[in-house]
Length: 406
Ligand code: GDD
Ligand code: MN
Image (cartoon, rainbow, N blue to C red; front, side, top):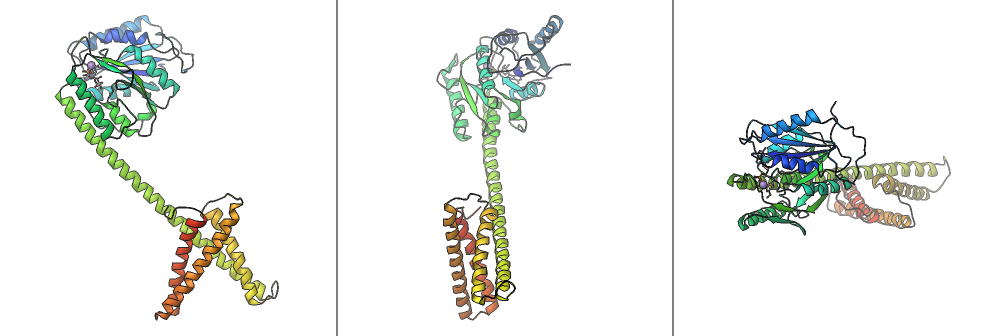
């Protein structure tokens, strides 16, 4: 049975017969030790016979290579070793574009780690072990081979193309808020498969990395400098269509970013209102238990069941007990504040003080309402409602140091 590879190198090809075999050999000679690797070539039925060339190479490989058991562990160290790599060909009927070729290659691959690169030696095989080494050191990040950082450069492109590429990178960085990336339009990068598992890809054209960066926001990014060298053999497939596809993709990703920001804002708002209401609910439940406790204690103390206190004294004990139990229940249950220290006394004093303020608000409002001609019951209910809301809010903010909303 075929074992899953550790690393899948995805190489899309269209008319690359002069480059591909040399590149495969070049990569094989640079692969990290202890890493089983598959090189997946996705060819779009290249008229120059690239596909046929590779399938012959794969057949030879099957005929001459005995599989080597993979027993070593994957670590951040690497050395040259080509004995554990296989080459696989994915044939497609016709030219469907770079992004879709890469995605199909990824789908047909099995590696836990994925590395994407071009077939025309613009992405030097020497940089492959650097990318993989970085990835193995931090296996949850995206590692990008970057032209636009110290040590990186472009060789062989005319000034106009350099300018265009620089402009495209700037548009992506500023338009899509990818400020932590210097070369977001690189075609040479590596990442762990799980990063893209939940992404639905919607762009087409050349820049798959852009969509990964936008849709996996929050993932750590590392960049490794390299020199992009324009192809020596074959022709670039870049045309005006690639430029318009690029602008379309950026526009789509820009709207996607705004939409997901809006959605996440909505969920936070929803979560905040649920939190607020559930805390208010708990606060009033605690208030109700306080009333009950107050009533039971006052009655027991005044009616002689436990003692025969003067009813004012009995009620005072009831009030003190209920305020105290309200305080602790609110602290522990309503506001989930389980820290007890010297500051707890200050909290208690604040709670008593603010509850007194609440009681005064209630009395004042009751007086105002009754004096304005409202019935007593209505006035009492309205005063209690306002006072208990302000009681909740004041204690939330000043006693338990929470934001009012949330
Ligand atoms: N299967 C398949 N299908 N492969 C394709 C297709 C396609 O439709 N179009 C291009 N390719 C392959 C090429 O054979 C090559 O291996 C690679 O994709 C890149 O194509 P080039 O035509 O060489 O691209 P480029 O050099 O102009 O563009 C480069 O620069 C960009 C950075 O500005 C590429 O490296 C891009 O990946 C990179 O993003
Ligand atoms: Mn190229």
